[in-house]
View 1 (cartoon, one colour):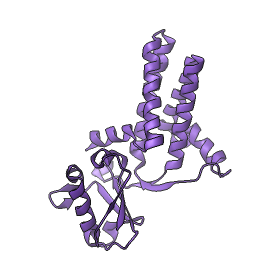
View 2 (view 1 turned 30 degrees about the vertical axis):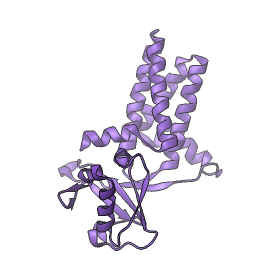
View 3 (view 1 turned 90 degrees about the vertical axis):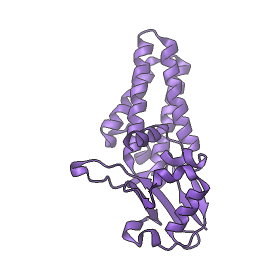
View 4 (view 1 turned 180 degrees about the vertical axis):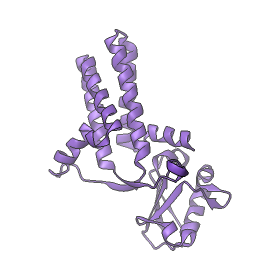
Length: 230
């Protein structure tokens, strides 16, 4: 038995699960077992019988393209990860997935939920504006993301939050934050302009989506990004 980790954009096709246990002596047979269990997933992974060019598969952090491809053997307990990447860049080169610390993402989501919830309790559009500014700056210049800086320089060193580094494409997560930042900015404008119902509805939309990501591991913005780029 091996465990295949399912990326956020593909989880709707496996009942929302973050990982699936499969049988198979090779990666090819394991993926066949996976797509037999969840037939809707197959079209997103394969073109005919060939793995789609933008789908990267890793076995214990190693890209199967650097191993034996579909014939890469699997041992009991091996961890398999599917990482969709998106074609683009100079010459149409494919983006290569990097590493993403999901603990930093969850910290970011926690701050967003708490501060926006506090803004609602205090009826403060200024706090909403602050959150929008932090989200948009963190999207435009990731190293300046305030909530992630708190994680990196305070929470992680103190051991209060443990790193959770995974092979992943950072682009969908960045898109998701930018989209959320735009919605929070729109909420700020609505609240400052006296449209309280609309403004707080947008705030609670972002809180809900951040909560889905934090508690259930489902990134709605990542799903939208993947669908748009397919």
